Length: 237
Image 1 (spheres, rainbow, N blue to C red):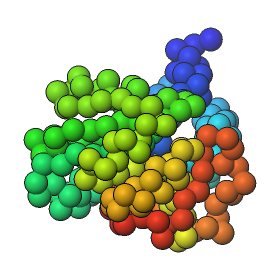
Image 2: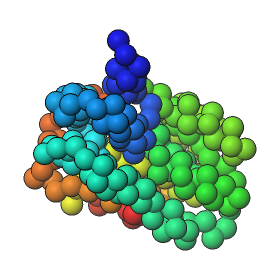
Image 3: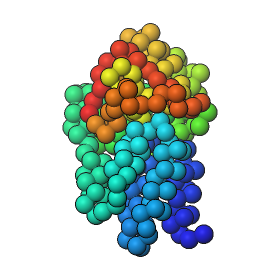
Image 4: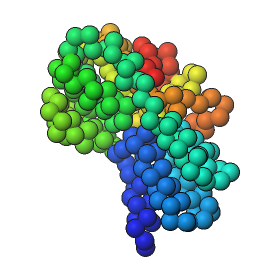
């Protein structure tokens, strides 16, 4: 097994990274395969495996679509530009007019970007363990490495911490005109925030948007769920 094949297998086994990070890793693999002169068939095969492994993640589906009719440097650069759009960082500025206490669920590249950028205006980040995959544990550890006051809590204890928070901050794997998709357990967190009259914000790249008619919600599986957009205070792109 060559080095790139090892990277492909590691990518397909990744259970903790957000969809934006996974798309970046996938694009790096495509660039390496293309640079080594691998034929289009091998790259398409990788993209099909990625879409099969992560059918809930719109950015992965759009990555496959980008190269469905061929691979080129231009197409790679076009998608790199789309992935590099992090307008949500500037557009989230209004959330941090004063230092805030935040609750997060699962792990999102966009949420991490915003927290790191506004770290001086954050008192504390409470990370739900986000079982069964437990992405919150690694997220909390990484925030601590960046000198951010962070704590990890079990999902069942969220009601103890929500009253003292300012808002719930989430990412998304897909956003349609009527619902968004995130890891299972998100709905519980959203409803709890609503119960305690706490705002809920979803941070996302526009790449995550997709028409409901083009999204196979039946493929959500056991680790993802759909949440009605009407339960959210605002989407920040």
